[in-house]
Length: 393
Image (cartoon, rainbow, N blue to C red; front, side, top):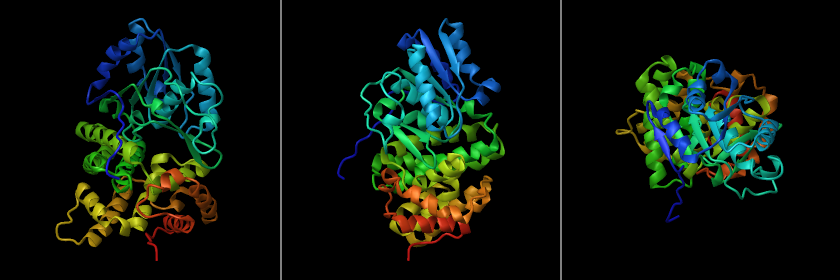
């Protein structure tokens, strides 16, 4: 391709203290009734009040919606969209991890559409998004999903996942304040951090990569590579939190424009069938998928190794690509995420049903630099089960 299409959220604020920009931005939309969507944990620890209290103090009618769960099922989305339609809101603010922000995007857009959420799903839906919907501000409290800068809302189905996707789902304003991530516990910091890293790695090797997304992806890998272990070990490490926040944001921009591929395609069924958090699903598969496709992108994997803090100077591309896979394995292990499917109590008997669900993720698989057919997917799951990285024969 000789040119690239690039799409970005209209306005972002990033950096420590960026939340101070919320009130001025809300004023720009002159809303009367605001729906704030978050998860119950953020309400319990008082974090969401940092968003709602200033709004209430300035006279806005604010309603809090906390019926949010990780990897939200379709019915959770249906319930929220119905609630939003009935509530006569004129702004939506999503505060939290990817689930809360994905649901906020969904609610803001489908509130002004007819039909069910299922009607708009990518794989099976029959209706198309055609209206922009309510103004929306997205505020991440984890460094991982990149949902604040993408046009995708992910929903869990019975055994897999699907998405509603359209540029109207893009935030009007994204506020990325690393100060909001300080309270995230180590396990969630690890999972969301590897999720962000996976976004950057897959965007960099994607068939849709271009010089702009390459710059975003490599800088994301550098920032995450030097800070994830520190953020997991000490959540109060301010610089680590800043680096992770910026890295996650850049990775979101990179993968939104270049796409993710095999890791995500195989991770979706793990979430769908076994309800493993999305970041952990990506983490356990990342070394095995990258090891399997290694030969198709050795130069780029050498670049990833360097961005992670390794040194390929005296190595051939082939040697560096092997080292890259080893470094990815080491990072997943160091942040405490199980490195085999067995570590998540997934039995070997499930590998076939996982394979059959992953094959359906054609939107994602199409971006892999090595075409991944059914037998390839089966082999990758098998290697993730045994803990031994394998390659095509």
